[in-house]
Amino acid sequence: MKIRSAKVIVTCPGRNLVTLKIETDEGVYGIGDATLNGREKAVVAYLEDHVIPTLIGKDPQRIEDTWQYLYRGAYWRRGPVTMTAIAAVDVALWDIKAKMANMPLYQLLGGKSREKVMVYGHATGLDIESCLEEVQKHVDLGYKAVRVQCGIPGVPTTYGVAKEAGKPYEPADSALPAEHVWSTEKYLNHVPKLFAAVREQFGDDLHILHDAHHRLTPIQAARLGKEVEPYHLFWLEDCTPAEHQASYETIRQHTTTPLAIGEVFSSLHDCQELIQKQLIDYIRATITHAGGITNVRRIADFAALYHVKTGFHGATDLSPVCMGAALHFDTWVPNFGIQEHMPHTAETDAVFPHAYEFKDGFFTPGEVPGHGVDIDEKLAAKYPYKPAYLPVNRLEDGTLWNW
Ligand code: CS2
Ligand code: MG
Image (tube, rainbow, N blue to C red; front, side, top):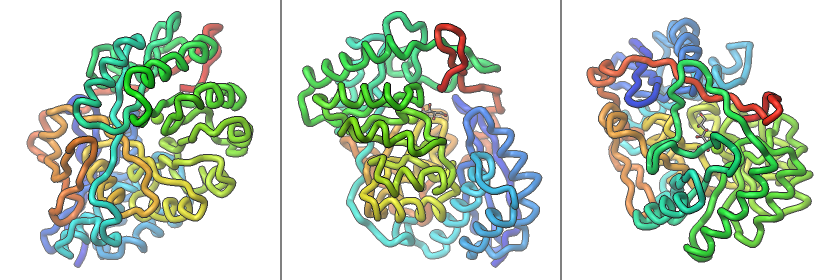
């Protein structure tokens, strides 16, 4: 069996999404997500100019060897562009292998560890009241876990808050990065009130998650974690950047609030110390940005040794192909924690027909062979690429800050 051809499909049904399609000489094809928010074209070029030519004629069944070829052979290892490109190839090959085996992908990984996958939704509001209304909507839909983000009085635009109720808060619709203004002080003085209000209205059983999006220093994160302990969050996410992984020791020694990080990680080396020293509780490195199923399986197995669970990133800037592959992985992985779920637009779901299903706060991956997601290339062609960037963030004094 050989790889006969491969191509990159860029489509923008509400936001830019990049898909790699690999076709074999036996007529079976597989697809992988290659979307990197705001850097989509970099991954397209990496795949088209530097990866696809090396794949033609290769045996698509040799998933591990291909992964090693693209990782070690690239010389320039790691990083989001490289690992997203490798991930797209890897997921497409796993899709092919599962189709050849006539099995849903989770069977190939080792079978079910659970009947269904708990997900968390996003409730956002310009103020606490409107955020509580969104929480209610998610509870009514059956979600057992909800991420809550709200506007901060005195801060003009706050990360992760939709401009319109119920709408996704991304993509940014600016052809160049918008500049946001941020005040950590105002945020730290306000956000504990949000969790108090959620607990007051919804009681203790609802899982509450929150994303600080790298905006705190370690000691500020320690303060926040300590202050919100009475509201027992499911997790506080990305509370500080982790290039210096030991930063999390400062946070860990002050608070029992569970910590999650990793959506920007592309390799085990980005989180080895965080996991080994048990400085975090959930690793969020996801299949599309951390080198695919082959690599994320290594990260998950390593994390399991240290009581760290998975909590895959699943925002709308990851395509349904990523969601499909993630749900099969989530169905198998023994140290599963939770899966993020931001519903894609109806246009996106039409471009990417899929077998996964939502019911009462949980997903099932579907039983069709492969990861269960396809791409309608004709429909995809109707949505041309549209430049869009993540914003950049400045403190009130103009200092360029973490976003
Ligand atoms: C967020 C993301 O979902 C999350 O946890 O951090 O929406 C993030 O802002 C985007 O995925 C960045 O591309
Ligand atoms: Mg996040």
